[in-house]
Amino acid sequence: MQGFKNEFVKQILTLQKEICDALETVDGAKHFVTENWERAEGGGGITRVMEGGNVFEKAGVNTSQVFGTLPQSMMEYLGIKEKSFFATGISLVLHPKNPFAPTVHANYRYFEVYNDAQEITQFWFGGGSDLTPYYLFEEDAVFFHQSLKNGCDKFDATFYPTFKKQCDDYFYNHHRQEARGIGGIFFDRINTMSENDPSLCFDFTSHMVTTFLKSYLPILNKRKDLPYNIEHKNWQELRRGRYVEFNLLHDKGTLFGLKTNGRIESILMSLPPTVQWHYNAVPTKNSSEETLLKALKNRREWINH
Image 1 (cartoon, helix red, strand yellow):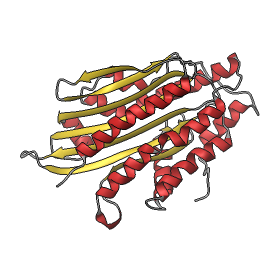
Image 2 (cartoon, one colour):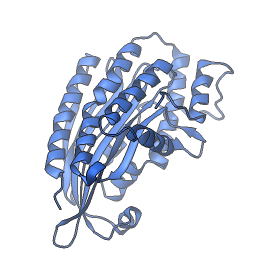
Image 3 (tube, helix red, strand yellow):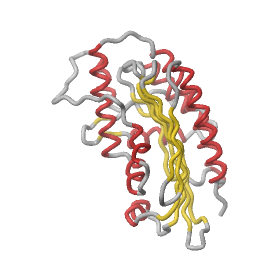
Image 4 (cartoon, one colour):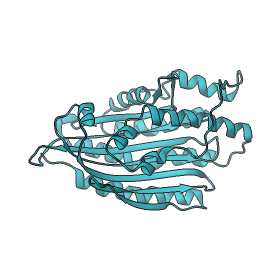
């Protein structure tokens, strides 16, 4: 079985530089700090983080290529018998300073497992992108979802509605009965598509990675300079608390990193720098804050499909 390890690694390394260069241009004040790290059990990665900028309070764009032996708990979780694995991907989380500019997350990954002869027995792709606003601008939600739909439609008209639902189901804080944000797309463990051609999985995943900036930067540029006050900032930090709760309680990527002895600083790169938790925090009735909360508690179709 032929895999896509080398092609995907090459692409995500190129994209990591392109995305970081673009974000530095937008910020205009700070540059990414780069750390190359190694994993004792095999592999490593490149962590790039920018903090305290004009636009980004914190931005992280990571790539990794790790390999070795899966712990028994992860083999059971993945439902596989093979112990040897290789995993690579790009993961980014951007936390703008301005409360009217949304946080965004994207992650695209590739995974292989091997038999005792080190032959590939299974491989799959996964990933997606989702938006977490603190104040709801409907036109931003529509633009983001339309951008993702346009990318999906190049391959199959069923992808967007399918992966949109999977995103809604996944990025959900069950303990609070509310979504983390307004969603996007999410897919996991795909290895065949139309005509049973696995190369289409690579093409689709690669295309969605390359279109990330086009789906987010227009929204960021529209909101990053809007005036705001301390009440707006407090609400942003309260909602960031929900973001933290999801990542630590429900996120599979965080679980995989911790179970495979990943680099803690890189795994927790996604967490925002300033967060608040207040007891029984309830937004004012008919406020912009309440409008957002209602949208997060009631799933919506942002575009027709």
